[in-house]
Image 1 (cartoon, helix red, strand yellow):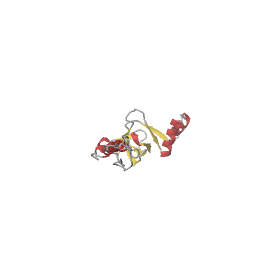
Image 2 (cartoon, one colour):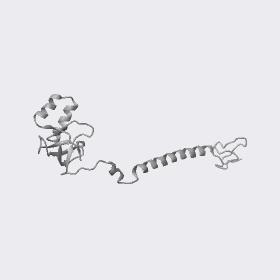
Image 3 (spheres, rainbow, N blue to C red):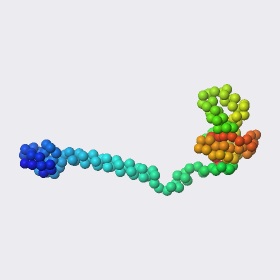
Length: 164
């Protein structure tokens, strides 16, 4: 007797072909059915991944823009302040001064922080103070103060601290 799948000689009392695993007298192939089941699982996972990717990147392109905060442009008058805190906003005369101040805060260097304020390289603005955007950056924004004790003073703030 010969296997109908691979042609290998088979003893009649065996239930499966020793070469390819095909069941004698039937068309079920054990090894092939395992491969098919594995392929089906991989196919399902790929299909699910594609659906998730399409769901994330498809749809209304303007939808994300509607959720985002309104954009702020150069030359606009805006107010400074933190959305979740009444704390004043730190303004550095240069971007480096602003970085130095936050480095002093991070390292708990009260003396260094005080020296930056006393030297005038850093000053504080009350929440809600109106400023004009001079340069807009991803992390830092250059402003000019339009009201208060620091009126007409220019400096750099963390971009998150400016809002319409």
